[in-house]
Structure formats: structure tokens, C-alpha cells
Image (spheres, rainbow, N blue to C red):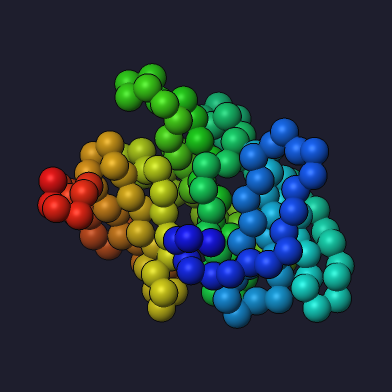
Length: 163
């Protein structure tokens, strides 16, 4: 995973026309595999057990397609960004981030950012959720425990040279 720097070995997708993403949280024995069709497959890497679950999403506000994801380091919560077509800006953006409990697959929270993000990530210490909106050149920072917005930064440089 180029963003987290975690090496995930031996993942293969055969004859699939779907977008597939996988994440293996650092302190977890689970591997979460998600297709673009709102489905998550959990593989217990110790026992080899495989389970499937449907991810809830608002069909009126998203296409049911997953744009990006992240998980807490213990694998207890999965953050899934559902996308929609953004008519204003031409393209697909994440319009809602659903936080799921990975034991019972209940939606714990829904974050609907004001500025459509393209990516989000949990901080290395697991305390914050960073939501990046390149369209608004902004970063929204959420407290991971209560999922409340704690800070918002605008005019963030898009390129290393500061522009």
C-alpha cells in the first residue's frame, strides 16, 4: 500500500471486472477486501476463515461505488468512502465516508464533508482522520474517537514547490 507503506503479500484478483481494494490493518489479523459493489470480504489470516458483508450506503447520494478506504490499526473500524458524480467539477468525488464496525458490520457514523474529498487517511498514531480535498485545496481533520471536525485548513499547496 503506497500510502500506508504496508506490504501486502500474495493478493491476486482473477477475471475480475470490478475495482478491488484491500487493506490489512497493522495490528489486526484480518485482511479486508472491498469491491466497487459495496461488498467487503474479510479474511482471517490466522484461521483462513472468509466472511462476506454488504456495506450500507445512501443510494440517493452515492453510486454505491467505493472510492477509498482506511481502517483503524486494530481493524475494529473500517472507513469507506462512497463516490458520486460531481456535476459541478466533472468527475467522481467521495461524498460520504461511512464508518463501519468490523465485527457486526453496523454503520457507526457517516461523515459528509463540505468539500468533496478525493482521499482520506488515519494518522499513524490513530488519533485523527485527515480528509483531503484537492478541489478546495483543503484538509479537514477529525478526532477519531468522536468523529467530530476539529480543524480545517484551506489553501494547502498541491505541489511540493508550494503552489
